[in-house]
Length: 93
Image (cartoon, rainbow, N blue to C red; front, side, top):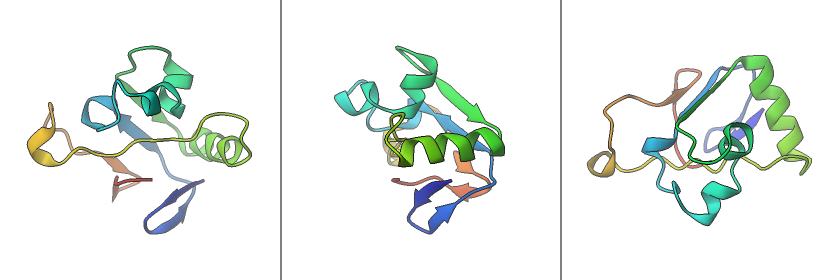
């Protein structure tokens, strides 16, 4: 369960590419769910719907860092892969 611009989303696969995040290599990156799970220099994280819901619940209670992914504008991206969360375009969360 994650909060997005479209509301609360649950029961979806979560796929995040850190190379497309504007917060990569910033203090926010160091305190992000992806870095928490993968460690330093994360690249990409994919969670099943069940694990994404569990991570959302734990982060909403302050038990683990929240997801701080913010997609880069297309002109700043280093890759051309589309980023989505359960078929929805990923934006600032």
